[in-house]
Image (spheres, rainbow, N blue to C red):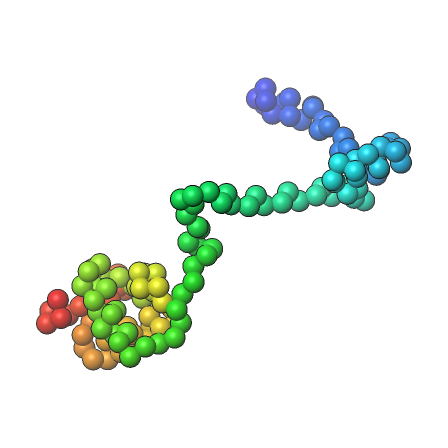
Length: 135
């Protein structure tokens, strides 16, 4: 057994100061509560609040969380999808929806329309590719 593992097995964690099963007096519990942490029963610990993002100039939002996609299909969607394929190369409809800012259904419908018209095919990786006449 390594040294750190032996030390970890022999060292006990410090007692939880808000645990009511400890020998805390009511005054200690009140002082702990006044610090902003409510006493809990049992061995549960309060969950840490998630830090809020900084609001400074130049702050970039988290695109995975704050992504707002436009789900409403438009008449020019197949042409916009084909143009995105021309600019960015082969891509899945999921990547096309990110590039174009669309919802998945909207991008999928545009891809289906282009495939039915014979303008695109899927390559061996499952990505849409413009056919020779469209490139």
